[in-house]
Amino acid sequence: MRRDSKLSSILHVLLHMAHAERSLTSEELAGYLGTNPAVVRRTLSGLRELGYVTSVKGHGGGWSISCDLHAVTLRDIYDAVGSPSVFAMGNRSEHPQCLVEQAVNQALDEAFREAEELLVQRLGTVTLADLSRDFNHRAAKMRRKSVHDH
Image 1 (cartoon, one colour):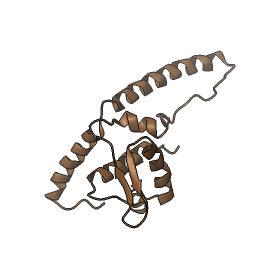
Image 2: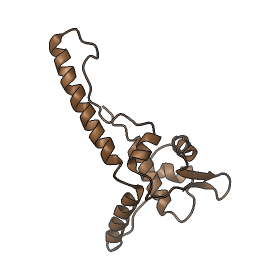
Image 3: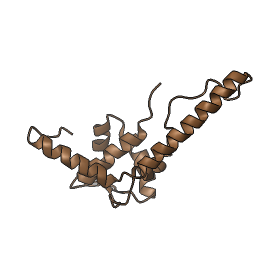
Image 4: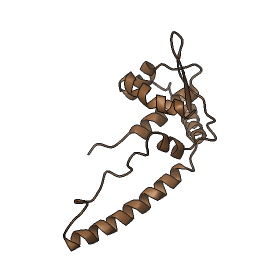
């Protein structure tokens, strides 16, 4: 089963925007992700409505981050991209007649719910500034060796 990488992808482009000294085009951002610029525009337009990014059309235009990196958490971005499902696992049947399967479903449902709550809670403790700081730390180490490719 394919994993939903929307949150990871949007965090990736947000950090590129945060560290860019200029606006970045949809084409540039799509290149970082290996995707289509229309996908980037569609996703970022939702973040623009929430005030996390801005865009300017035309020559010299593009996307820029417009939020305070210290105030925005991964949870905020998770919610902004539609709170994608955390787990690919699920019950074999949602409405089983078998009593054994009902017991299995109840146990799994509780475990999934608790795990998802814990993960979403953790996302609320990490800010974009934390990611930026980690990137800066990694970039400083890399500069001693080579340049960050993209």
